[in-house]
Image 1 (cartoon, each protein chain N blue to C red):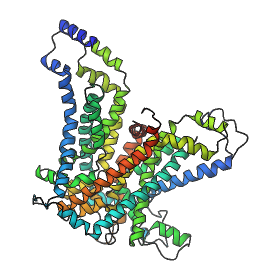
Image 2 (image 1 turned 180 degrees about the vertical axis):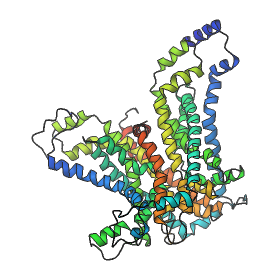
Image 3 (image 1 turned 30 degrees about the vertical axis):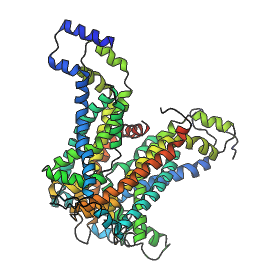
Image 4 (image 1 turned 90 degrees about the vertical axis):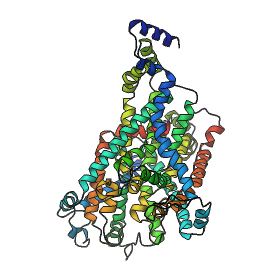
Length: 319
Length: 295
């Protein structure tokens, strides 16, 4: 603070700063100016729509009609709708299975990449590709891979390996379609999980492993008692993100199945879109979207507290 | 499991070199190779299909589907001259650049205010911006669509430029707070003593030092804007104003017979700009990805 006053004094002695420069030296003004663009953008295009969405869910708005308050009518309607419950079921199933797959395989890949490898940088760069490329475009590639007549997987399985005599009907059968979508989601999620967990692994000091090795710990014990606990904080954050964005996924399903066959693969987001935008039932779409919020809050709290617990139980300070 | 004879590998202190060659092959290189093959196969398949003539594409018995007998540029020609693909590319580029600059501007100032102009409650502002990142677009697109309509921005790229920052600003702010944190206070104090104004400190000292952070945030914003789908699908209606991901799915998929060659060519060309852009800045990209998570 001393420095500031002296500086101001000296400046005045040398040359008189313009009123603009003075204004930009006043801290409250600067704080307001600096925060205004970000806070303004987020308030107008995020907070307000969030509230508006909740309000819309309690109205009967359609495209072109503002709508009036109808209370819980939309939700009562939805609760009797088997398609909605199917979407809820598939959203939970999709998220659970895809998360387990992504984190299992992603952690494995991270452990592999944490070893001493030739061409590590190139491998790491190449592995991130599925995550860089627009989801819809890789989803279209998967759509083609899952084609009924010309699927390359069917070709390899049936014509080359001869393990089956009929081609797979990946997207025609409800359960096959569900698992195909989950596989595509895992494929896209592995790189993000692997690269972020790898960053976590690299912060673990090798001396811990050396000490454990000297104490005669097995590979499993070293993983279980050194890697896992030290990876937990970063795992909790990555998992929170992963669950939120898997649960609200839209692009993959919209590109590959559009909710079909017979609405079996609708996620809540795709159902909300279908009812709200092309269907014109804004209020119903908003009600479906709002129904996602409790799941998201629960998933966030669960993954954060269940996984990060270890850390605050031990009373370590956050670094 | 004790493995006797640790092999001396003096140049690699961190690798606890106790594995035999075969063990390393089976447990490390084999799974890694499988991962790489599976993660890259869809791109190989995409590229292959984009250059494969229809006669080969739909005849897997006579031609080996994993290779091309006579490559063709027919699909790409069709895409560039018979569809509005070039204009989709231009729209996407414009939207991505616009949204990136807007978000960088807003988040640099916000991060500077939160990290450097410490004020009462600055952590709470930071926390609020971080929480904004957890609100997914799937919840927001319906109310945003009604807003965009009322603002008269429906079917205009400006609707996208203004809404993309909702997911870009939180991420970039968060990333930049981390970068600003790493710049020593003393540098700013020196400048203050030398009579620099706050604005001069920001433009002449803090921003140049935070350049790697700005580049990371910029790359990230560009990629995320390029990949965005749901807003572009909901807010844009006319064919020539669509972005590449939306246009490929809605304009190229026509009728019951899918033009797989053209679809894959479109997907390939749409992925290339981000892939090329990414390859120049891999390290920034990885550091921003991991840095933001570690923060």
